Length: 248
Image (cartoon, rainbow, N blue to C red; front, side, top):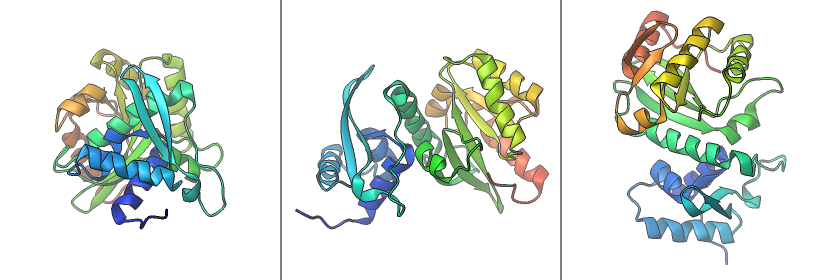
């Protein structure tokens, strides 16, 4: 049985493709938070049956859950298969989805206005060989000035040397947008910010929990060497630039 694809369906498919893998809850929060959970689950199952989405069972810390990704009917024109995280990376990818939900919610970091987002699978599809790509990219504006957060999720499992090498890649590519590093504690955030200051990369470091719980979380500004609210750090950057800053 074939189904008529709605604008909401397209948004769900795009979100699943862009992230690489996403839970029902993440897709609902990003696309249609006012839709009843059971209603959306039924629609996701229909999209899976029609091969617009994949549906796989995952057992993790939260128990047994269904994950959704891009199906065979959503491949790009070249026919290339979309990137999907491996089993070892799944929990990281799901946490990235939660981070995107948190930083794109209405009123977050006002007067910053979020205008769009891309997940890792989408960023990988655009990246040129050798270019760095973040876990997610969230575009925003303040007045007429535009920029983006290059979201890097740090779960505290990588060494500081690995983090330094990651930042050096941004430096070599001359990326001008701030990296929003979301980690496990403010002690860890401070350590990451110190490395960023040493390397010379613009990093705003905070915790994933802070962006989940606060509409304007405190961040450690590696460039300014201070603690401030995320909105203040963004306003300061657009004010100094005096014009839209370079995009990745």
